[in-house]
Image (cartoon, rainbow, N blue to C red; front, side, top):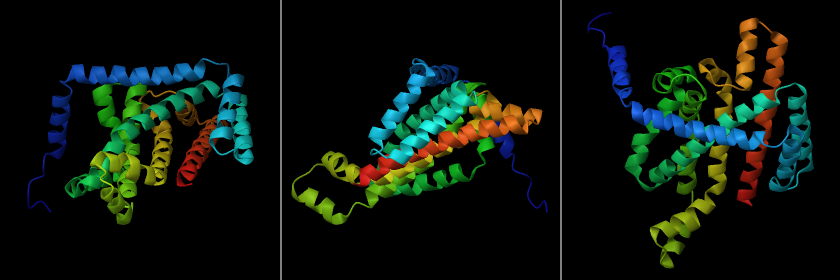
Amino acid sequence: MEILPKLPLAAWIDAFVEWLTNAEFFFDSLTNGIGWIISSIEAVFSLPPAWLLLIIIVLLTYFLAGRKIGLTIFVLLGLFLIDNLGFWDDMILTLSIVLTASIISIVIGVPIGIWMAKKGLVENVVKPVLDFMQTMPAFVYLIPAVAFFGIGMVPGVVASVIFAMPPTIRFTNLGIRQVSTEVIEAADAFGSTGSQKLFKVQLPMAKATIMAGINQTIMLALSMVVIASMIGAQGLGTAVYFAVGRNDAGGGFEAGIAIVVLAIILDRLTQSFGTKAKQ
């Protein structure tokens, strides 16, 4: 049914992308900045030997997650398994990518969520954009990431940020809006300014909800590691990707187990922080 001629949507998008690539200085600066964050996190985790880093992570888990013995034992056994399978260095690379993507998502997402909670018009505009970001197949984000940032770790982080940021924005907006009007009225009665209400009332009371969004963001960023390996992002995803190419079921399963263990550790830790925030 060709009543109307086909819209040249692909040509428009290609022209827009080509126009954006002219801003080479901006994207080079962004690439250097993100690359520096990845390298810094990787350097911190690579500084101590594996056994010492394992002990540090286990102790931090025990004290930060409310002295939960079961979780601490799982983290100990999980990290030992990853090291035993020979994926410790790959785990460090993956963790660097995930943490970088999560930090950027939080730094950008929380202010946008606050802005949405304060302005109804902003919420009406941003919500459809978030719906679009969450329904778009993750593979599609690799195209602009490669066009603007080339091949390597940085485009993997950029694609992960786009894919993983919406939950942080949504839950920040939701958490602030769920603060009861009675509490807001009490703050107004004591003469609180807008910033005082935000930082001393609304954000502390919304902390548990915001942590739930951050938890989802971290999980989504981790879910991108295999996809990001297709554009040169190194780590556990690369091991899975190569195993698929070689039809190596055993090697792919081992790398997959390492990803699952890392995902469970990050999930339980962030959930523990969310539980402490509620308390």
